[in-house]
Length: 102
Image (cartoon, rainbow, N blue to C red; front, side):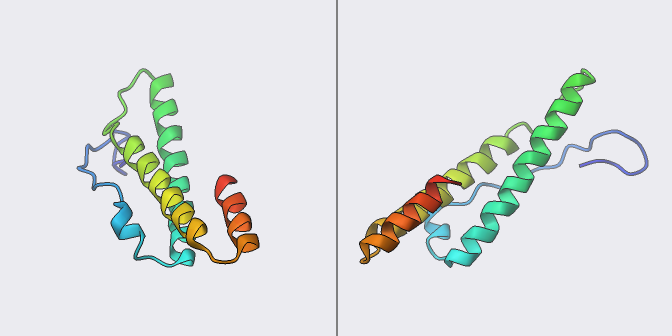
């Protein structure tokens, strides 16, 4: 996080990634929204990391990126589980194509 008074990064403790068991309780729409929140977070972190690297500065809390990626992977896993148990084969194939496009 940036300190607004000076361009010094503040080292904050970060939370944990999402567990698959927690994601299974969420609706399709909630998972879809969470996917894009995580995608935005991943892009922000990658941009910050690149910017700091170009200035020869250390990226704080580098463990945040793997947590975001792992959560995104778990969302895809949960959605794939749902697509597999879908009784309609056409709908199942459509869901799998959509998930693979993520």
